[in-house]
Image (cartoon, rainbow over all chains, first blue to last red; front, side, top):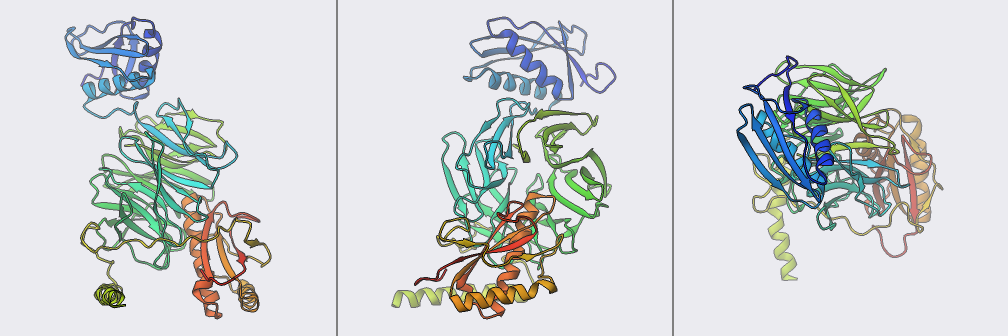
Amino acid sequence: MAWGDGTGTVVVGMEDFIGGTGETAAQVVREDLNASGVLRMRDGTVASGAGWTLRGSSSAGRIDGALLDGKGAVVFNNHYADPDLRDNAHAFSDDVVTAITGGRGMAGTKLAFVSGRSGAPEIYLADSDGQRVRQVTTDRALKGAPALAPGSILLAFTSWQSGFADVVLKDLRFGTERTVLNAPGTNSGVAFSHDGTRLALSMSYEGNAEIYVSTLTGSRVKRVTEARSVEFSPAWSPDGARIVFCSDAGGAPQLFVVPRKGGDPERLETGYRHNTSPEWSPDGSRIAFTGRQNSGAAVMLYDLAAGKSRVLLPRAEDPTWAPDGRHLAAVQEGALVVVDTVTGSSRTIVSGFAGLSEPAWSR
Amino acid sequence: MSMSRALILLALPVLAGALLSCASNEVASGGEDETAPGMGEAPRRAVLPSYLSPEVTRGRLEGIDFGDTVWEIPELQKEKVKAVALYLKVRAERVIVAGGAEVGSAEYARQLGQQRALAVKAALMKEGIPANQIVTVSYGLDLPGKGGGRVEFGTVPTGEKAF
């Protein structure tokens, strides 16, 4: 990897994109790649030995995009033909990130969140740059706790449409919905496993809220925890072997890790009294969560190897990892913000949505 | 007749296994995959009236107040539970126990509200109200009415059916 300018980012040149929608396509790609944190775009060709250059054309929203190395050799040259220009630009951007860094990009991924903007709490979906926000539920029943399956085709959320808290799966391609878990009590807080084949969630049909693992259809479930207290907000480790969750066994909620097949939960010493909304980082090394003290909420990062946590974003809550493992989204003062865990810099991507809460990034 | 007996016989080892697992304080079916044959199937809730539906009378019975992250019924609130139990006995009505919570996380509020509703259900059962006359729901941060850190009651005339 070429560390172009001494700030840890790789400088990538961008030639003008030709074609009728070339300028728009180039603009989206430039913003995507600058937002990646690992690349920094500048106009023109970078012809030095370790440099990179993008060359592209776009008409009617379709994009032909190429990545050239410092000697002018073509690394890849792809055709992107989705109906929407932004989808094509995001796909090109992610291919560039992967080719240069070997890691995953986040441009083509989605974020789900809750907002009461329409007068009732409904689920919304946005691109990772905050563009193309669309409302995906409309029945006006109370809703919450959205989660996106890998690939952003399946959306899970909690709906009170029946009068009780049930888990609903929605196929975002066809718009079809199916209630998958409606046991007596509150069924909520779904997290998809990273392979997309399992759900973890809280259910209370056996007496009080416990963590369960379920098949996607809800046909088979297995309890993972057993306590008198409230167990909630499960999230999977990337390898699917462990689950981090909250328990209020000690009064205020604390974070615990338990093997996915059950066993003794281990408490994480976060240093905060009130801990909620944990989510495991894609590389498995850290857990993001909301920490609350008298001074209010903050997004925290707990380092599993060091056993220590630090404040990442003050006055913010409900963190959710981007699939690139570098960025997090969270709610800060009513807006959806994305923060870079390396530089600490943050930017607002969605604002003006009343009651914006519980963001969930797809894998 | 013979079919239902067969089903009961089949269910007995499963029930015994579940009881043993609880008694030994182990996680239910720990170590096995949930796709293994015979692994637990979550029960389905019967179709029940929503707390917000027109047939449910809300606000007639005084709600129970909980503080902070508490879910055990506070001592000073226990008389209210007795009053609710008395009303339900006299009127023979069904009750929807609706829980809420005012804590930072929306998901914690949902689960804490449910735990409070279950605590109130258990207290009503202790006062002699049958379990099939009580159903629980949680609205978390969005409990209708006075909202927040409370459990409220909605009543439904019993008619011929219990829950």
